[in-house]
Image (tube, rainbow, N blue to C red; front, side, top):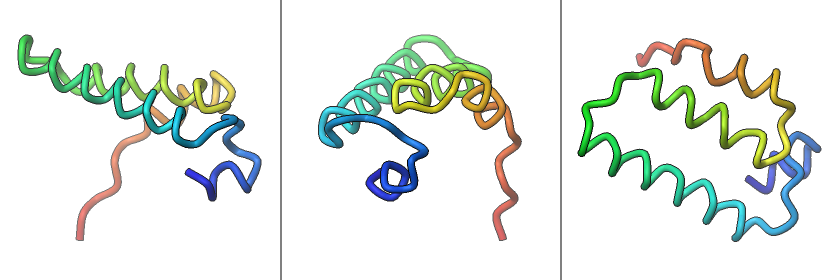
Length: 73
């Protein structure tokens, strides 16, 4: 997270608060997924909402959150 901030990509003020916001959102998504069987689009939507909270422009957040995941070796 600090590397992203140092590069100018993320613009949050306090890394602990930013980490808490992201972590809380992910925990909520996991709980929601256990109550309702969510599809992959739910994770994409969550990422698209979280990235602008960290300072990424909305258009870039959308593009990043909808990219396919890389193949594992």
